Image 1 (cartoon, rainbow, N blue to C red):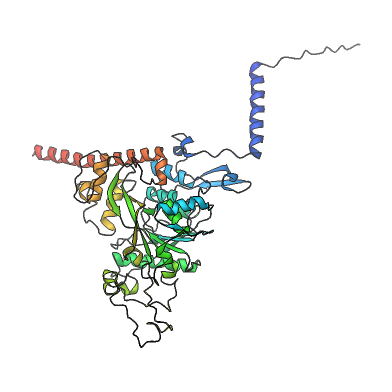
Image 2: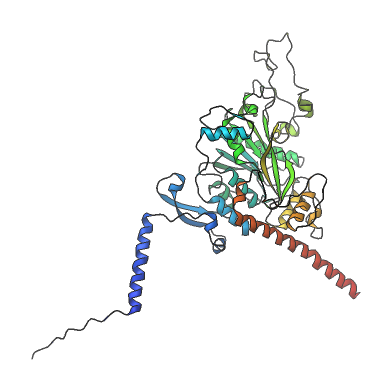
Length: 495
């Protein structure tokens, strides 16, 4: 019996199957290419508006090209958001995005121009002075922290924060930046202050009921210098103390690192060693610039800082708050050091017997950074004041921290009545009249004309989102009082 085999005709692929094969091939090719080439790092303006809302509090990990910051190869970068919401979340994403440090390399021509902008001379330095920064940290908003981080990215060698378990008014507060928390990760691990800046959070615990208000601040700030010393600060480094919502502008800080600064070079044995800012103040929004200038923060050269300078040559002044406060008035009365002992013609040494009649002045502690007289450099800083994420947070701050307003958390108290600074913010955000003999609200904080702009200013999407956010917060706060009045009216009418 003969078996006949008939060749089966080859069937044509359906269009659907062909499309699937082609699509799979394309995906395979793209995936393979991605193994060798890291994806493009998007700039802040390139992210879709709903980008941040897709992650619902989770840390975002995505790949980027390390060549953009001068490192070969590629790695993953983790974004941390902690309790940031809405526009503050957007700001943290912007601030944590890895990028090159724009002015890291010294360019002599540019440095000469920079020094002239601030009334200084360039002394041919080929290396920058190191800056050691220190600030207290508590319930400060991510708006302020992120804005300062953008301004100072890559400038500091060391950043030290000190957090306490009590407010200045002795209200208990939970430690927010405890090790391992995502808030701690934001400031210490995310690179928000720069790829090489070392960030440390220290903690201050004291139940002394007599240590309150400014005394408590002095105690916390004293830890900053202790940490600077432990981390190797020298007499040639710059000490920088500020609050978490204030900063010198970037150009000025770079000038301090390379220029001939009289307060650093010719301070007359620490008689005049302090550089003070003249800071533009924003109230709650970058669109609410005021004419009020604040004379903080401050810089001091290490040679004139307590525990860093030579304590054998400099007298130890009387200080309040058990030695941690600023110098007593008798020492700094009108800047003439009235109580400073003077060597006589018959003395062979100075007041400490160092073998010279040269007059040395007291070294400055962290409290002195905030009060001591110094040279103010005009329009050299920014103050991001009252940049809280909510009106409730703002009320809490004014009720529990320095100079507390006892009924600030009473929602029946109009928020603008808490403080004149808050009233300025409300008037600006809500476009209402504002009158004050000491300062005025400028029409639009974004209109800087020839003024130095903060780095955060360039991110218009964030600036607009923040302004809308605080506008809505004010409406919500005011609606609570309206509803309460309506309810009271209804009750009274029914009686």
